[in-house]
Amino acid sequence: MNDLPMRFEFARPDVLFLLLFLPLWWMLVWPRVGGGVLHTRGDLARGLSPWWIPGSTVVLALPRLVRLLAMSCLVVALAGPQWVETVRQVTLRGTEMALAIDLSTSMLAEDMEAGRSRLEVTLEAAKKFAADRHHDELSLVVFAAEARTRVPPTTDPNLIVRSIESLNVEMLPDGTNISSGVLTSVARMMETPREPRVLVLFTDGAHNGTGTTPLEAARTAAALGVKVHTISLVGLGQASNTPPAVRAAMADVRRRMDAQRETALTLLAQLTGGQYFRATGAAELDSIYQQIARLEEPRQEVTESERRHSARVVPLFLGLLLLGGEVLLRGSRWGVVP
Image 1: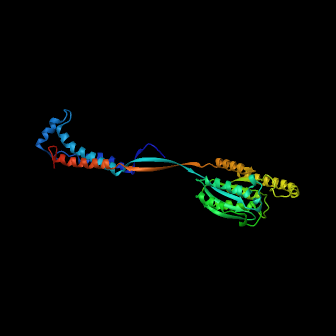
Image 2: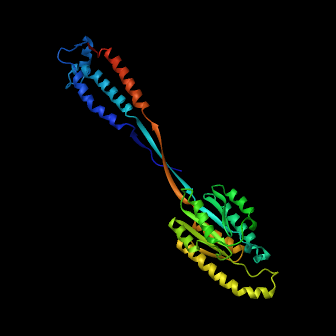
Image 3: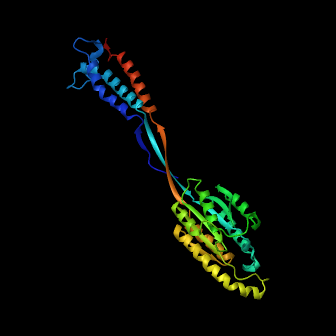
């Protein structure tokens, strides 16, 4: 929070135009010849006045001058003098972010480091990522043959973490409908006005859904201003319990699927202004999340507010004090009758 120098202003500066009428008042109330009788003790004023100012002028002018000053102070008080303090506050504003996680059965393959499954590694990294996004509004979407919203947009990262812990592949029919995952995530993010909007999607398979293609989904996301970062999770090889003959037969199929998947995910990221990442293990996946965190750092947002402190008490008090002084002055040797 930064406090800027205070400035002085009037709440109703138009009231200050009344000061222009005070010279007119002065001329109207100045006594005409024979309009008043001086006290005999007014000779004292004559003795106190400078040689170039007549004593009668001092006696006539002083009470009126005091009243003129009093009215000037009251006009200033009516104009609402105040000190304005501008407070500048810098806050961090995050993004509107959705996490889309693939729950197809291929995520159960135990071909990551230490025999861990792809799903286990993915969920662990996703929890770490979500737990650190304190300034974002997060939503969680899961997809397989279809997509489903698990958590709508929320500013509570712990809710996302708990929901990630409960995910399993039995929640959805098997398949890999990347387009459905993208469109569902985009729909959730469009429910809130926060910007920018970012989708982090990762999958271990190629799109095999029907209907909308990943290219069409990418164009929709780009048209709505949603940036998509795609993560391709690639295992180190077939699971250890896979027979060698089956492993060899599936090698060529797997290479073609990997090429198709990477092409689709790369285009999806490029069309929306995001980046494509390829992860082969838990450590690499953590590194990818750290890169995304750096790319989508919270933005500084500067807001200014004003605090107004009234200063009308001083001119009001001074004006009343001068009015009282003017009354006392008129009752003294400086007074004029009537």
